[in-house]
Length: 239
Image (cartoon, rainbow, N blue to C red; front, top):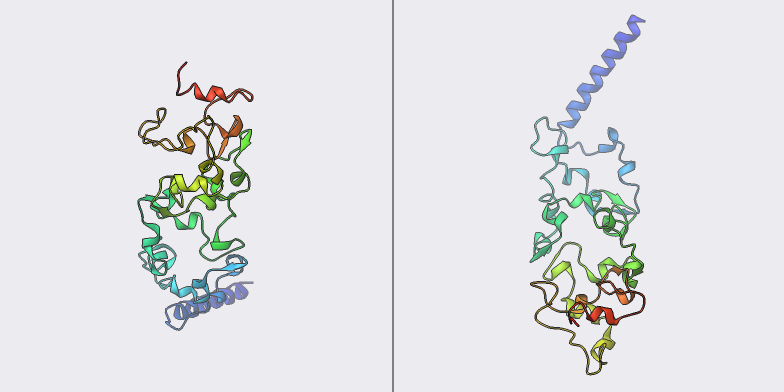
């Protein structure tokens, strides 16, 4: 029994020496000899950096003293910016997780079953941070999970990370409002400089309508009982 234990200890020492020697070698590139990589690479979409070799991102993986965790060449997001243009993620309005540099919160660094290496499909991914819209009435593109039809996920020039200014966003689908009288004879103004109920905001479509969901008909922003649409007018036009 003692001889068996001694042999096992000797074998463990030899293996340790071999691994250390291999790990310090610049030619050591086969990570699969020690690391089980299959769980990280089982997704349908593989990060191109992985195909280039683990050492592209983990050059210091076998050094005793490394500045960054897991032997990374740099910390995230600077590591990502080695390939991805940082200007793409910097603009007037920046998505909070992008500003915080937590790329891997939304994206898997190795592989995924979702496009863009997303950890979950949209809109499920969005709802990990944003409250799900479960009101009585839900805007059709919201119900269909088409968040990225209106919003950019990283950074942009427009409020609420809209791909286009609000005035242009709504009329992409609702073009008829520009051609017909809106609400009243003569037409209610669609766009004004000031919103009487939202200080510092312009009067636009979302002054009356919630762009995501509402408990009132026609996605009205304010409470309307039943089909009595005239109730909405009273919020601005006091009788």
